[in-house]
Length: 215
Image (cartoon, rainbow, N blue to C red):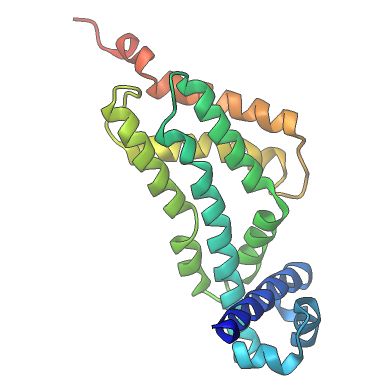
């Protein structure tokens, strides 16, 4: 058991080291020796776990994407029991999501995907499986429960989730210049409040009556 645990830990160290090197150097300039040094293992150990540089790249991207997704899914947890103040809970969740989207690892992952997609078209499948689509599905599930409980007014929770994520991420991408400019927390909170306000104007139950057509 200890041997198996050690092998898993070593593989994770290799994947983390590989992602760090690929993020710094890009795929073409990265070398396996540098990855081994980053991971704290011998070069043959890298090849024992992952047979070649291309395989290493794919697995490193997949592991990073899954890690990023897991963090985002955890950020949605407060929506399971949002309490009486839905606006505040949505702002809390939204702020957590934009902070995760703007962190170094997430920005590096997006840059790598954009840069290497033409050389590795199959990594698009990784992006779909562990990317925004999965987050949208999970958020739609939380919003569907709020709709059933009468806390939101919408007929399509998938569409409502798309709108909320677009309101959160769209301004962030623009203001951060696609992750090249760091935003302070005050600005992130300001964007989140504006996004949630607009979302509730469209989907908030308290505004549903105002949107009904006059008889």
